[in-house]
Amino acid sequence: MQPRVLVTKRVYPEAIEFLTQHAEVDYVSDDDGLSPAELLERARGKNAIVSQLVDKFTRDVIAQLDSSVRIIANVAVGFDNIDVAAASERGILVTNTPDVLTDTTADFAFALLMAAARRVVEAHEFAHSRKWGRWTIDMLVGQDVHHRTLGILGMGRIGQAMARRGTGFAMQVLYHDAVQLPCDAEYSSKERVLQESDFVSLHVPLSEATRHYIGEAELRMMKPSAILINTSRGPVVDEATLVRALREKWIGGAGLDVFENEPRVNPGLLECANVVLAPHIGSASVDTRRGMSMIAVENAVEAIEGRRPKTLLNPGVWDSIASRRGA
Image (tube, rainbow, N blue to C red; front, side, top):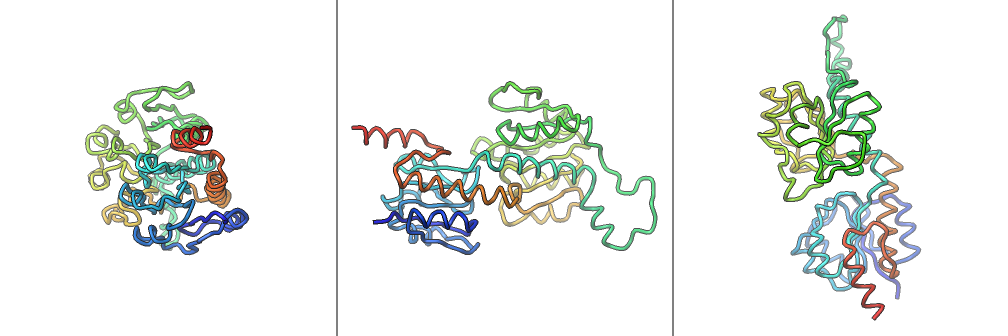
């Protein structure tokens, strides 16, 4: 009997073509996603689930999954939508899609930085408004990026890629992370990064420790001209406080690709001229999104065919499975 795989949301067609060569595929081919109840119903009898960040695999949902489920293969580098500990307790493998989106996301983070610093969105809207009557010396002046200080909070793959882009603009790069890394950027305290940086870019994963990692205390540490960039996860920033900071000019601006209650955007942010907003498209290039889709389905196939998936988040589960087979 062929293995059975649930794909919870639309992915690139190449991924489905690959899956159908290895398994019977239950494909939710639209963008609406599944409710928890629908997810559990469609997952019944499946050996693998290819999920996306909107699928919430809470401890309660995981507890109700069929014992047939061997893997949850997430089409994202972040996995805060999955309770990995609960999955591990059930012996379910969990994978993500790192590396393929590193440079693409760093490109977009730097694009947000540039757009916020040089007021690109305001300039675009002004040019389209047909109100441009003359050139003036201070029309839409912004902030230089070159030779300024870039602060990075979270020096994982994407943070390091962001640092390389800053170096290319002759920026001084400061960073803070739980681990000090051998790199050209200067390791600093979180406080120093916030106090001295002209641009602060967030690249920490979402966890209980990083929820509201940037709140009032942190925003008040930043320079009045500083710009905050967030391409990690929305809840890393206390969004209501950020609105106050932008309105009251505690900081100079922000560039945001993620939001605390996606897809809802805080109405206060929509009223701020000094923030550039994007709808969670940091990894949205054709090649990268296709690559993410393929990595996820390849992970699913590896698991259902009895091989170790390449980007495994809970290797202890695999070790346990391998040990039982050896016994």
